[in-house]
Image 1 (cartoon, one colour):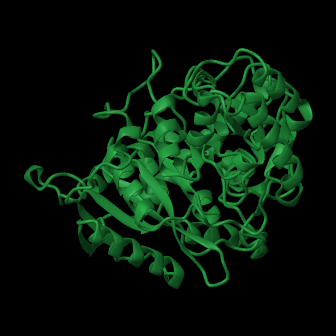
Image 2 (cartoon, rainbow, N blue to C red):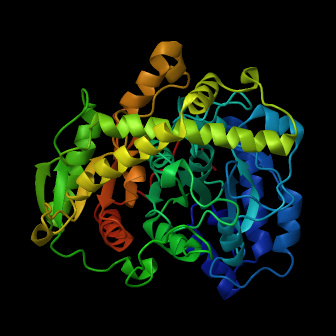
Length: 483
């Protein structure tokens, strides 16, 4: 008879196999995960709201017969609405109003159809607009590798929970790095899908000018691939769709990498962290050993000011829009003093922006994105012909909690910008990118490496990520705070 405590470090694929084989029941997996959350979460504040009673009822009932039937997971407290339940976006005003959403989001429907059982919601920064999970509405999420440090954001609660062994997989989303950055800081696999690979429906067509997407954080590449297979797909009426993949991403795990042309970032926007540079250098050596042609280079316009200018404008407009929608939901205005300072500032910027200003920002980003795409465009079509770009995921190892705000309001934004110079570009271009845990600092903090493929080529990313996982395995590493 299986001791369910043995499931702690099993990935979702392995846990699902236990259910299929009859070695464990969904109820046993769910009870074991609930016990881990109750024991470990008080040290990390990753889970802010549970639904344990409902989860136990669902696990003991007729679950959908999907590939992950009975496997427990957590949902980020931002998006991924479940009908009749709260999603509070890290805000105090929604938390205190106890708003319940009327419909399931598409991605929640897909998770449920796959057989997952939702155990609760994970901590996020307010509206997901920063890269550390320290909201005013809740206690900060702590990094299981060192609880004095940030777990990243905005999917920091999800990443801390998976890294600590509470659940094998958790919902995450990414508008500027919010899957990849927490994955880097918590030593996980964080795969950001191609734009429109996962629908925002039925309530949203696009957000942040198409920069945002849903996904998961996992401990293994095979879980990342298999879950993305299941949540991919367009809903009727989506404004655009991602190009089809040649086959299931799960089938790419273990497939030959081939002779890929890989660029290793050789231009930095500031002083590079030695650990981040060491992580990238190691990835380059491993890729060479896998048979790739590796060379130092940088996309010509990667750090162009047009990108930051246009991206900031789109976020400001979207925050103003989102807050207006929440005001209609609440039936009252949301006051500036109910918002964290950066979001009050974003709203003010968005309100001051004319429609022409907004469209000009979108047009400028579109021109920049076409120039970025040339790096991955085949040489016979006038491009540079690279298959992949390797960069640090973040600019430094996980910072101490409070570090971004410690310099005061004028410097906080600069610190955030300096810490995340590599990720948001690929939200704007819509390209898939993955962060892999390939390095640790001398004092035991994880440092991720980002790999970026051409638009629509998650298949290439998964093949390479799985090969790197085999070449430099990370699954046996355990954080000091864990189940």
